[in-house]
Length: 392
Image 1: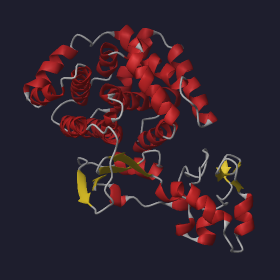
Image 2 (image 1 turned 180 degrees about the vertical axis):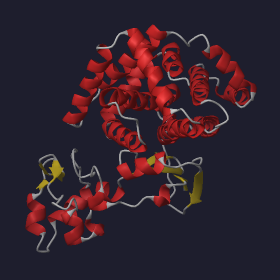
Image 3 (image 1 turned 60 degrees about the vertical axis):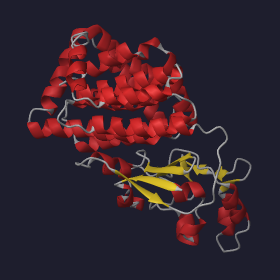
């Protein structure tokens, strides 16, 4: 079995009670069957407390004021304290680790929904690299696993990461190339022209692609009405998803109200002021571009190869881009409301808050793919309006 990890994987360390937003709060923690059995057979003095704190019918821990009942006043886990790490259920042992399973391959990442992981990703100054490790495991077979498609996905993802990490090119140009590449790959898959993907790789690794795409982007710059509408459509998109925390719903509603209360000229005037304040110097501009790069690479690595199961390459790339766009738009709205310069901690907070709402709900992940795949509001053309609106 081949295991693939990002280079920051081993740097993760839970900070326990010092966490600004503990993973034991705000969501229902499901318990695997093996752990349920162990908890039912627990014989220590903690057994009664354990038994009363579990919803045995639903197979999850009970909650008190939206927190797991075993989260104590010091923001630490009583199961961990009383029984040890080995008695944690699979969910609690694993999080924030995330595993994507493929035939003969496991892609292991860290979920950005954890504040510590979000900080690891966004404070990383150099490029993210991925390393591989071989491990002897029981041979497995996946029915109807399309190994040809999977190898094409691996190859094209490597090219996409290289494009996104090319810091000699403006990030918006990189994003537009990234989007166009995925659009063209999806077309080849739909037409059952898998082997022609190799020629696409040649096209998108040619140095001339950058100047070619940048010229094409000129047609989308200055389209103020369309870019303003795209921003509002992104907030509408969030309103279609399942909400985990009521505070998140309140924030989305506030974002919508803020955008609706602005006219077209005011929106773009404020947006221009926002970028002028945050990218005045060379170092500030570079840092902003690094934030963009790290978020895009994170979502790309986590979900892209999952297209081997549903063929939705284009939708998964759109998720990467729309996630960055939404996070950045929320930073803009916070700046409008608070009149304070955006800090690194703001990037971290909005990134993990957004990730918690999207990534820990299969319903939301499926819903956002459906919308991005089928709604005209999120066509290639409209995405480019949004990308060009953030071009600095």
